[in-house]
Length: 437
Image 1 (cartoon, rainbow, N blue to C red):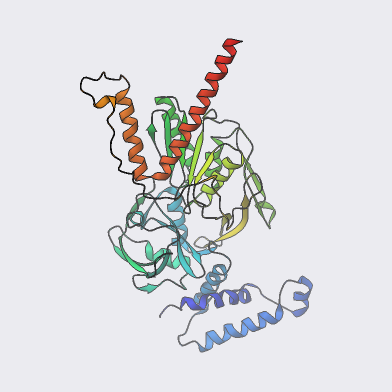
Image 2 (cartoon, rainbow, N blue to C red):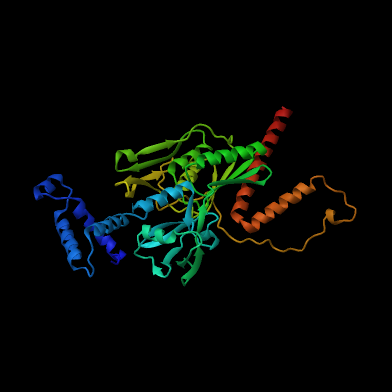
């Protein structure tokens, strides 16, 4: 038996209400004041027409499953019906290891849209970008598929191939990308030094341990030398577990609200606060975001921005400001339902708006101008050496490499250094004035 076309799913979603809601009498419906009987009669008639007249016989359980899928698809890009396999995939993703392409996707106007590729994944290696539209999966049109169906096709055993047809803003024609599935091991957090005193922490995804991992990364840097500034990189971070975003933001705040949520049901109204434990002692922080920064990463950026704790740099974020709750229906099925919207401490809704950076820096390829090199003292024969020359050369090489490879990170580092220079000069001038008096 061939599967029912996805084109019927939105219609089937409406029909699910007929089966799930049993209307025993018109009087009862009027008493409840919540059931549009005329529409239900119309839906029941259409449901019956599909059962009796569709070109292939469809059993009721299959048709009702399509109905539930379609009903949830019509709500928003993130609500979905989850079979056992889909629920397991969600759990695998939050744990940080699964087999597939390494790409976070959502739905937009019936199309599968890329939210962001995952660090080190086949999707990132192939150059997929936030905002790309997946038009075909192995030559099968993706429009009309449910998000579950698209994800199921993209997931698969390590080493297997899949061809994606991609539509991208600014390109007149779609293009094809051949990908090889791999085991995706998402390293949630990694750290390194940019220069002496200036640390870098990359958060690729908010998993269950991300708050602990960021704390350990900070402690590792602090044990090696004194931190003068930190870049927190949330670019192309599709989000993850809300609680983990609160844990990360708390590391840099001295109390206060991190995020609060509002929804229709009482349990949806929750406020999350930071513990008063800024473990960085107020050092300057620059947070990097881009259009692939979504959900939990927007919570962190918005909280640090509202508390004036960090400078947000990069480009406007994705704008996913909604909370999804997984509601089990049975041992093998569940629904992921949007139950609330979240707001930054100052009451800003991020939904469909995103976080606007304090300093806009587009990702670009930057090439230094080739100017005629002037003769300097160091070029003269027999010049005296400078004891600090090696350190200066190391800094020049590091800065030059960042400028050509990642201009946004280069700008973030430059800003941190500028903040520290001003701070040291103020301290020096204040000490001098105190000495004179």
